[in-house]
Amino acid sequence: MPRILKKFELVPKIHEIVVDAPQVAARAQPGHFVIVMADERGERVPLTIADYDQNAGTITLVLMVVGTSSAKLAAMAEGDELYAMIGPLGHASEIDRFGTVVMVAGGVGTAPIYPIAKALKQHGNRVISIQGARRAELLFWKEKLSAVSDRHIITTDDGSSGRKGLVTEPLKELLEDDAESIGCVYAIGPAVMMKFCAETTRPFGVKTVVSLNTIMVDGTGMCGGCRVKVGDQTLFTCVDGPEFDGHLVDWDTVLSRHKIYTAEEKCSLDRYIESRQLN
Ligand SMILES: Cc1cc2nc3c(=O)[nH]c(=O)nc-3n(C[C@H](O)[C@H](O)[C@H](O)COP(=O)(O)OP(=O)(O)OC[C@H]3O[C@@H](n4cnc5c(N)ncnc54)[C@H](O)[C@@H]3O)c2cc1C
Ligand code: FES
Image 1 (cartoon, helix red, strand yellow):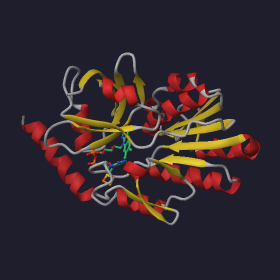
Image 2: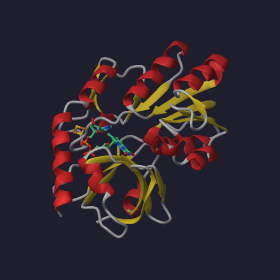
Image 3: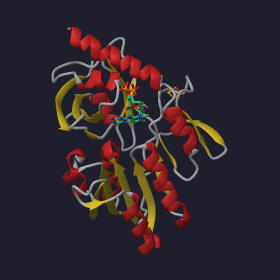
């Protein structure tokens, strides 16, 4: 089973995990994800392949602790083996010559944005990245993202790093300045952030790609748990995505389906915390 080679906390509650997974690394492309299980009774957790090294046979995952299963994964140590991992899953990102691309990353969304930005840069695009977080201490991979960007703008909600405000503000300014030159905008982060990025680009008619983090179960198109409405179609994020046209996504459904298991998730986390305290 895939072994954890390296694991450390990047910023509070966000962990970088390097996993020995040569077969996954050999086929990984930007936009792909894996589904992992910490133990036999764990949930199946989708995580983006944030980086990969085909020579070393490793993939890098960046995990934010939000509930029971992510907490179980975060509690694993270097040398431990994951119970299961499948992937790469999903469609790879479209890596084309767009001219200028604006990559908007919110919070843990920096991890999935990075490999796409890197590939778009290598493909000859001018990459402008906008990286946002609630406060300075939650920003990670600043240097990595900056290294693959021609321009790197940081925003924080409280102004503790970069400019104070939301990622949509510099995005709007870039569009007002020269929307013609922007061939594509990528936005990855919390659903509400992606929704407002899509609303910002809509009047300018600039192609906007988002990566949806819907609740998933099997990850193979069988259960319907990850379904989303995109235009007049019902699609499955796991096999049709995870990237979709942000202007066509029905954001109200995405946002309401995220909250569907809130009571069960809270109950599960309370039980997990209690069991750790007893041990
Ligand atoms: C294709 C894909 C790629 C992803 N990539 C990453 C990644 O690279 N790094 C990362 O940290 N997370 C990523 N996620 C989100 C991650 O899978 C979830 O955060 C995780 O499954 C939550 O499990 P949990 O049991 O810890 O939390 P739960 O107990 O299930 O939920 C706790 C809280 O988190 C919210 N939540 C639950 N599932 C999701 C979700 N899928 N996305 C956002 N919020 C959720 C719930 O609404 C709830 O408030 C990805 C999701 C998808 C679908
Ligand atoms: S996770 Fe079951 S259909 Fe996508």
